[in-house]
Each structure stands twice: as structure tokens, then as C-alpha cells.
Amino acid sequence: MCGIVGYVGSREATEVVVSGLQRLEYRGYDSAGIAILNGGEFQIRRSVGKLSHLQQRLQEAPTHGHQGIGHTRWATHGGVTEVNAHPHRSASGDIVVIQNGIFENYLEQKGRLIEAGVVFESQTDTEVIAHLIERETRASGDFLSGFRRALQQIRGGNAIVAMHRRQPGLLLAARLGNAGGIVIGLGEGENFIASDIPAILDYTQRVIFLEDGEIAIVTAEAVRCERLDGTPVSKQPQTIRWDPVAAAKGGYKHFMQKEIFEQPRSITDTLHDRIDVEGGRVILDDLRLSDEQLRAIDKIYIVACGTAWHAGLVAKFLIEALARVRVEVDYGSEFRYRDPILDERTLMIAITQSGETVDTLVPMELARQAGVPCLGIVNVVGSQAARLSDGGVIYLNAGPEIAVASTKVFTCMVVAAALFALKLGEVRGCLDRATLRTYLQALLALPNQVGTILQQTAIYEQLAERYRHTRDMLFLGRGINYPIALEGALKLKEISYIHAEGYPAGEMKHGPIALIDEEMPVVCIAVRDHVYDKMLSNVEQVKTRGGEVIAIVNQGDSAVRSKADVVIEVPETLPLLSPVLTVVPLQLLSYYCALRRGADVDQPRNLAKSVTVE
Ligand code: F6R
Image 1: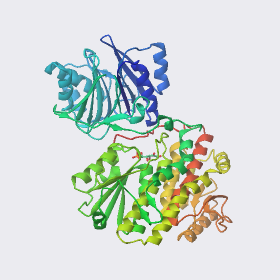
Image 2: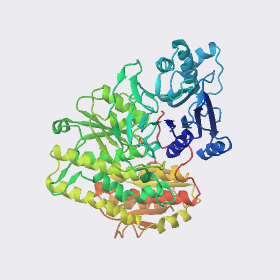
Image 3: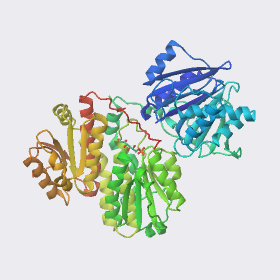
Image 4: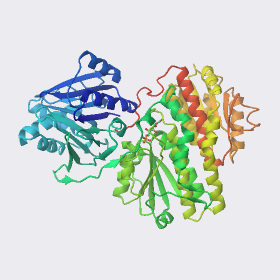
């Protein structure tokens, strides 16, 4: 969502800040701005729309200086206007602030400031922070004390960075709650601040993360951390081993295309070092749950959002079938507002690519408060979800996912869930070695099988041409492929803007069948498993009503082939692992449909990569 970058050192700050913002473009935003401090004056440039608009502005009116902050905004309070874009200034113009997150009691604080005579320029909550810091800086006579005192009056989840024009060389950054992370990049004679690691990876790999309620006092020479009350905190720098080049498009037209095609590699990386086929064992070194704890679990709650929630639904099938533990899958945004039963035999599993999705982080926090361990299935190393996962983290190792629509991370999430289900099944005595070996071999075959699917793209180009004017599409699946029907529909709607619905195929007759006519293409996932015959009947029902069937089948299938209009083949694997293969054609279908319709594939309208607000 909003992106934050800060710099202090000897380079041109504008270049560092803008290049950092560029690296954060994937998060999605609607406006951008920077403030550079030079000679006791702020040079502020802001603009609505893409970063290129801000860059254009900077060409017309360049900024110079060795210290600055920048922000990409995704509007929450106040419309998408230049005045609402960050940075925001305090009344005297002494202080500039950028913020990511939501300031819950801003109206109350704003009211008080207005009563005291402050005139507001924007409708944002961030401007309130600038005025609050100014008021408290005046009252305490010192910027750092003023910053601390202002932050103590803020309720919410925020990442905040501020500069004072009479305090050159100093940047203050803070993290409150879980809505926005702050990473400090450590350099030689220079230091960096960012909301996300990619923003600073071109400059340094040594970082420290701020925790809830911590402030970083950043100069070119040093970084000091303390709590909001001023107590010093000593923090251990970590080294991030991402290669910045890995985040570039690598010859593909879009990041989404690249990420779809990277799946053989990303799945391999998720499996790497975690499989011992000979021994029939899964090795999950980062699991912080003892075998005894795993045996004692009698209920698992999976929390996640969007695509990760679909991976959670697949995980439910895997865990129930392989480890015989009851699983409930919740939307993070729902879990937090109901009254779930959490006890000492419960485990929470949080599935999240970014590890920063606030709707997923809050249930994790609730679990922590109830003493329920939480296992994270997470892609971004060091993210908040990873740090909240006291039961351990299964990192996906999928590398950065830049396209807003999630693809490679979904298949890795399913693979990670399968690894955990096998481990749990092994520990609980549900699986013998021979069965485990069969699953492990099947897992190891997946990267190559996905590669086979990726070799045939002509069919999707033809389908995209055929359906370029289609308004609606239905996706049907059963059993473990029912979540794949949901995922196929989500992918199509979010990037091509074709309205799509996913359903368990058995539900079709209870309502959606009314929609079927010649205008309604229906994607049916009908691989060989225990519900194959049922899917075959569903295909027939669609055909009888004039619908057009696009069937995803196993190689060599003849029964569905004889009925469907279009057939897409995927290799055969164990039925419980089939989602890793059946989802790939649906990713390709949505990619080519979006491409054919001229949509902005990597940054679909209204969407953001990392949703750090409620
Ligand atoms: C859809 C998509 C979203 C995310 C969701 C959760 O393509 O990417 O639905 O899956 O916003 O994000 P994470 O996994 O970062 O928690």
C-alpha cells in the first residue's frame, strides 16, 4: 500500500528516494511526493498518479540535497489530490511527515488542533501528525521529545517518518502497531529508511526492523533505537540476501508473466532442503513446535486473505486428509470480529505472501494474546507476520512477487501446506513411510510438471481472442479443486475485469445454473480423482443448457474431452497435490485475457500488493 523511503548521507537524496519509490511501485498507489532538506528549507514536490508524473515534476523543478523523504500514497483519508499527497507540513513549515497506516483517533486530535487555531490544508490524518509533532516540539523545546510525545497521543497502526528543517542531518522514524513496517538500512556514512526491503536493496543489505512502539533516530553516521518512552533498545542488524536483479522483469513483458513462468523454480525453492525421500521424512527446521505439541493439537484455524485464503482452503483438505486434524479456514477480516474458540489444543496457521496484511496480522495478535501458537506460511523474510509466528515460519523462498495478482506464491503456499500436512501426519502416526515417500516423490515431480504446462501457451492466446468481449465466466471444481475454481475466478476478475464466479460444482444446481446460456463460458476442473464422475455430470449439465465448457483435464482423458468445447491438459499427480497443476492454466488464461483486453496486468486498478489497512 503506501510506500515510504528516507535517506541521509552524501548522495543526492532525490535520486535515492525516487529510486526507492520506484522499487515500491508494485505495492500500488495513487499519488507520490518527496521532500528534500537543503540550507534549512524543504523542497517539496508532489503529484497525483504514477511515479513518472512526480519524475516529470522533478525535471521541471529539480530538488537537491543530501537528506530527504518520499512517499507513494494509497488514499484512505481524503481523495486522490495533490494536496492530500505526502509529505505533509506542519503549520510553520518546520516539520514534514510521511505516514503509512491509519491514525484511528485523528478526528479527535484534529478537532483539538482546530480549536487551538491550526488551519488544515488537506483532509489527511497525516497532516494532523505534522501539527501534533510541531505542537509537542514547541512544548518540549526539542524535536525528538516532541516526536515521542506526539506519537504517544496516536492510536492506530502506523509507520511514520519526520524531518525538522532546523535539525539538518536527522531523520526520525517510528512504528506503531502492526499496520506499517519500518526497515532501517545501514550504510557507510549514510543510512536509509523504508517501508519495504526492496526500496533500499540497491544500497545495502544490512537492515534492522522496528518493532511496535519503537523509534529510530537516524543520521548519516549512526542509527539509535529507543522505545516511545525514551528507553534505549539495542537491535541486532540482519543481512538480507535478496539480489535486486531478481526483482527485475528478466525479459518478460510483465512481472505477472515472469512470475507464472518462474513457478518451476519457486516450487523447487520451497521444497529445497525440506525433503528426505529415502528416509520418508519432511524436514521443517524452522518449525518451533515440538512433536509433543503437534500431537496435542485438535483444532487448526487457518487465517488469510484473498489468494492466500484460497491456499488456506487447499491446506484444509491436505491437513484433514493427511493428518486427521479438524481445520477451519477464516478470512482474516472475519476472524477478528467473531468470537472464535481458542484453547491450549488450538494451532493457528497464518498464510501471507507479504506478511504485512493487517487483516491477517490482527488474528495472529489475538492468537498470541490467547496463548495459541501461530505458524506462519510467509514469503517475505523478516515481515511482521514472520515475526509474529511464535510457532515457527515456513518461508516460501519464492523470491519477490511484484505483480499485484499473486501467482507463484500461491503454488508455493500450497506446496508449503503440503509439507506441513505431511509432517503433521507423520508425527501423529497417520502416514506410514511408504505413503510419505510416495507424496515426497510426487512433490519433487511438481516443478517439472508445471514446466510442461507452461510450454503450451498458444491455447491461451486463442482463448483470450475468443473471450475478449465476454462479460462473465463461471469456474467450477470439486473437492480440493473447488478452491482452485475460486482462485481462477479471482485471477480473471482482478486483472482482466471480466466478471467471474467460482463455485463448488455441486452447488451449481442450487443457483448459478440459472446463469448458464450460450454467453457463459464455464471452466470445469475435472482431473482424475474420486469426484471425477461427478464433475463429468456437471460438464453435461452445462452443455445441456447451452454453456461453453473449457475443461481442465489430465493427459489422456477421453470422457470429458468428448463433451467439452475446449480441453486443456495437465499432467497427473496425486489428487491432493493436483491444485498446484490445475491452477497454472487458470493463471495463464487470466494473464492472456487481460493482455488481449489491454488491461494494466501488473497494477490492476484499485488494487494494491500489500494491504496494510483494514
Ligand atoms: C490476489 C492477491 C490478494 C492477496 C491478499 C493477501 O491476486 O494477491 O488477494 O492474496 O491481499 O495478501 P498477502 O498474501 O500478502 O497477505
